[in-house]
Each structure stands twice: as C-alpha cells, then as structure tokens.
Length: 311
Image (tube, rainbow, N blue to C red; front, side, top):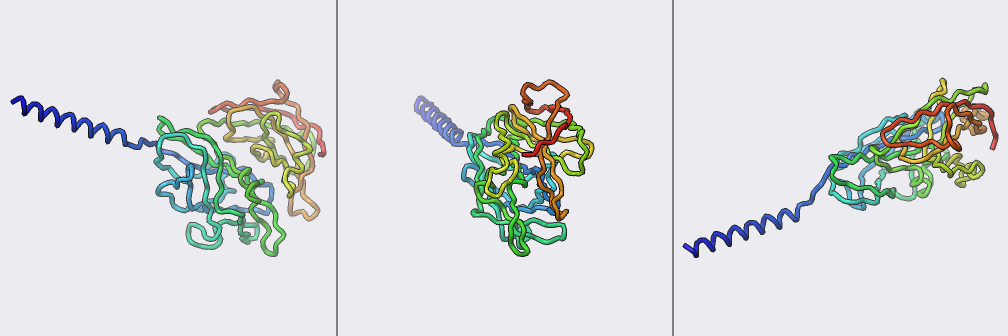
C-alpha cells in the first residue's frame, strides 16, 4: 500500500512539473492595431498618392498574416485613418517598425506600386533608394487589450518635384523620407483646433504648421533640405479652410507653437508658392505662444492673423 502511495505521489509531482514547464514556455501576446494617416500636400496638381505596403516588421520580425495593401494617402487627411492590420504580437518592449514598400506592383499586381496621380490622370511612379523604411519609436505592449499604432505620412515632405519627362514627382531621399513619417501611439495623442480669422484680404491659401516649442527658426526653415522644402522641421501641418477653421489631429503630449503661412499661385497659375508668414494675435493668454497638448483632449486656440511677414 505504501509502495502504491509513493508511486501515485511521484506521478502527481511529475505531472505538476510538466504543467509548470509548459506554462513557463507560453508566449503571452496582445493585439496591435496599426493604422495609417496623412498630412496634406500643398500641390493642387496632385489628386492622389498611392503607396503599396507589402510587409510590416516590428523590431525586424515580420507581422504574421499581413497582406499587401495599396493605400491612397491623400484621401487620409483631416483625422481620417485606414486600418492596415490588427495582429497578435508578443508582449514586450519594441524600438522600431519597418515598412516594406513595393514600387513595382500594387495589391492587384499592376504597375506601379507607388505613384502620384495628377489632375490629368497621369501616373508618376515613386521610388527611393531602399524598399524598407525603418522608423524608430519606443513602445511597449503590456496588459492592455490593444496597442493602437499610427503611421503618419507627411506628403509635403515625402514627395519632391522631379524634372523628368512625363514623370514630375519622386519620393524624397531615404533620410528625408524617414523624417517625413511619424510613428505614434494613437491612444496617447490629442487634438489642436481653432479659428484663425484673417484680417488681411488675400486670395491665397493658408497653412498652419506645428512645431515643438523652442524648435522654430524662421530663417533655417527656408533651407532645411537641398530641395528647399519649406517648414521641413514642422511636426505636422494642416490647411486652414475658407472660414478660418483649422484642426490638427494626433499630436503627442507636449508643448507646441503654431505658425501660419500664406501660399499664392505662381506666374503659371498652376502651382502655389510660399509668400510669407502671418503675425498672430491670440484671443487667449498663451505664455510665449506655447500650447500644451494632453492625451485624449481637444485644445482650442483662436486668434487673429494680422500682418504678413516675408522671410
């Protein structure tokens, strides 16, 4: 009888040990929701901008079950987003996300995979030095049900004019392209909106640019890159509508300032070119013009646009 008890006890201990080992080897995971959005481009000849993403990597590891997808970035403005994937990933800390772009074919297998569609329905293929764009961003997948990651393209900085026959646009070089894309945790962002009443009569377009407080240098912003992308260090931007209303979505927590710029048509009447920046008079007290953004909150800033200053 004693012998039987010892055998049974040994079996139970062995079983518990096996269960414990199996439990220790479990890869706990949560879902990562990855979306994409876009900041506006100030070229009125651009009707659409398509990019094809063939894979997404997190810290160099490809996301499972991701299907190639072609997205019109220009349609994803003013807070609109498109879901790329809702996938299960391991818990832990991550440092990078890599976008693998397909320049040769779209998600239907047709050429090209990335292009600008102009107002005459002409396709201008987009390519750059590398098919992979790696974005540095520290994020943690912990006990929440989801982490909501948002890829924010800034087409104004990502695309440059090209002087090729029948091909007038290209992606910027690799360094500029990386700086034109933000990766953020959507659940930790806030919104800035308001009305900028223009006291100067003009027929141009007004763009609002957002900068981290203390980072705006008006002279340097005219020559940030060799191809002279104006306001190249801005975090993001938005168009001001005809009523003076503006809205900027998906700003990370922090201190910001805003600058308003006027664009008028050039001599050809086909393109808008930078004309100057506006002086501002805020309707509320903002020390040194600094605006504080907090997650999941809407911050309202109304102001008058008074004088126009050429840079």
